[in-house]
Length: 293
Image 1: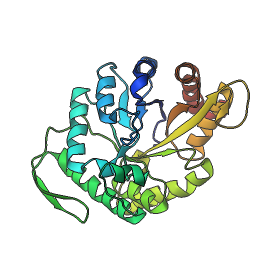
Image 2 (image 1 turned 90 degrees about the horizontal axis):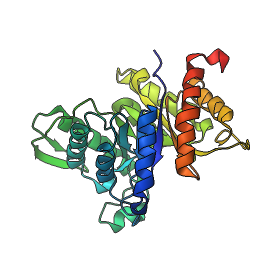
Image 3 (image 1 turned 60 degrees about the vertical axis):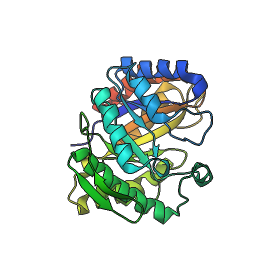
Image 4 (image 1 turned 180 degrees about the vertical axis):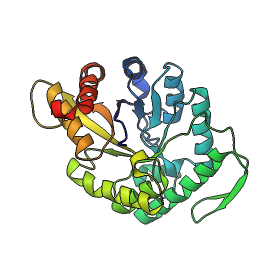
């Protein structure tokens, strides 16, 4: 059975934009969207800490799930990140998912005291972190000795309130295989991975999942789509609602993506409302009846 389509909105962690962040999260919550995603770039002086902001938003919403899109692993130790994730999940009543990235912007990471890693090192560290996080969420004492992380005597807890999804924000073929082998989902952005690259990477994810006897249909494949809903049709991510519905239907049926988070490139609050109240309901209907789309 195909993974049902899910939809969400982006919220930026700007320190000066808390009011609009709260309103956009409220739009997602009241409209019945599944997700609110918040980017995590701790070295950005204008940004609040993403996990703290997610806790703040969780207290102001009641249904929508929130996730870092994606958490910067080099600046967050895996055992502590696992505890933070479980804590937010408990406090929110089971509404937290963990997006996790190997770390972009090497200069910013190094400037805050984080490690400077090659792509291969970052990928290996990400794999180790997944093992530590999974063990932490299991709730039993454990130890871990890896190349990049050591956790000699972890006393984990509390357990998350629900099975937290662990989604990787990666774009390369080898990292995509890690999604299929170990993760619950994939979070990728259209500007970095355009639609024409999706089939190749999705096939890698599916193959890796099958090799590990995991069900590829259960993997969340989340696409961050940036653009505008506007009368002028300039392409798949810039046009009227009807054009967006065609784009989303195609991404789901032809490109294997099953979750979509909208990042308006301008007029964020109004655009977010149009997405939640007009585009998403029509897209859900089109996906229930693809022949009529």
